[in-house]
Amino acid sequence: MTEKLDESRDEETAVAAAADSVPLTRGLSTKLLLLTILFVLIAEVLIFMPSIANFRLTWMQQKLGTAAAVGVALVQGKPDMLSRSAQDELLMALGARAIAVRDAGESHVLVVSRMPPHVDEQIDVNHTGAWAAIAGAIDTALFGGDRMLRIHGKVGESDMGFEIIIPDEGLRRAMMVYARNIALLSLLISLITAGLVFYAINRIMIRPIRDMTRSMLDFARAPDDPGRIIRPELRGDEIGVAERELSSMQEKLRKTLAGQKHLADLGLAVSKINHDMRNVLASAQLISDRLSKVRDPSVQASVPKLVRSLNRAVAYTEGVLAYGRTQEAPPSRRLIRLRQLVEEVRDMLGIEPGSEIGFENDVDAGFEIDADPEQLFRVLANLSRNAIQAMAGDAGAEVVKRLSVSAMRTGSVSRVTVADTGPGLPARARENLFAAFRGAARSGGTGLGLAIARELVRAHGGSIELVESVGGRTVFAFTIPDQPVRIEEARSALRRPA
Image 1 (cartoon, helix red, strand yellow):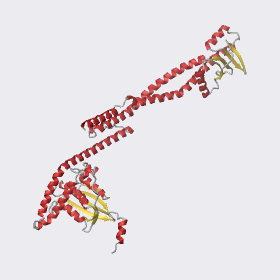
Image 2: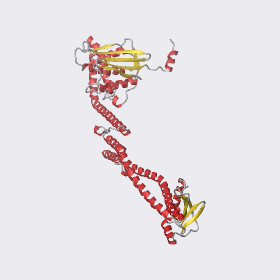
Image 3: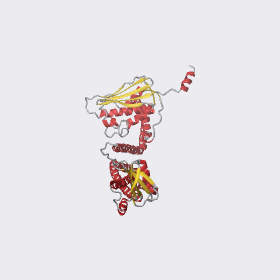
């Protein structure tokens, strides 16, 4: 068994360690960096082809502009001002085969070296749209290199149009160089942008999320350690809200677990003394049986109260673990006289007639309530005991110390009020009212009295509340509705003969 437990602990430790050290390839930082690079590259691709198309059109316009400058000089000069070798050198420098001018609807060849047999494509640089330019760029990049182009259009404010016959080999080569430079520049921009975005988001989001993840893992290993609770940063964004909520949740969970541990320790301690306590009470019951045979009238008057108290004590010791281990038994309800039950609570508290603490039973003699007598006794006893303890610790002989119990009925609902003239509940007790181990009003208390009272009242379908708690007055009130009448029982009762 020990070996299995050790193996289970080793597996849990391994899983926790694996969760704490996420590989770099699966971390949010790496994913963010790769996605940023990808998105920037996609954005660059969207502007890549328009940029290549614009470069192609600009290249052709520059060639046509150079040819136009030469053409204007030739038109204004003598036709034979350039020798054949000069024409060849001019066309070679331009990369063209022929230069022509179009004036008044007629074309005139100005310079020609080797006229190609045919032209593969004609391009008007003045009337090329964006989509046509992109399509032409794609066509040149994929299928160009051995085509002959006829580029024509007007240059500047001149009325004459110019034409050049030029192979697209140089154009495609220039486009490839430009595309390579643009691709490298786009990659560099994407890397720089991704790095900056990664740095900013890592500082703003990834690192705080990693800290929260690490805090949750550390807290899961030792939820009772206050040092493992995350310390939120002073941020007003969503991350700051998440950190504060996580810190609050961890603190509440730590307190809840501490209360449960306290409850478990209490149950363990009570279970150890439960057996011995029952033996002591059994001996007390035997003595009470002997006292019942004594003829003294005062003894005979006290023995029934003593027997009832011992019976309740035995019942409490048998069910003392019920709060921490199981639910209370369902109430066995019946009509009871509340004033008599309050008197039994007074006798249990041991308040003597001449005591400094007064007990007032303001319940009418004929007031009846539909409840479980034992459970209702426990509710009143817990509330009354808390009040007595609070007033007993209030020093000063001149201070009025009085506990009063009253009741009223509204329709089918009974409302019972327990009021005292004690110092009132402290703020911590009011904030954690009816919470076991957190709602204690005095040092060393457990807060179980109010928690048990609330559970018993709720079992009756009622509710309990703190009506008032100020210096000199504390009022608790609980309501218990009557049991609903079953229609079958009501019909059978009506059918019975009088």
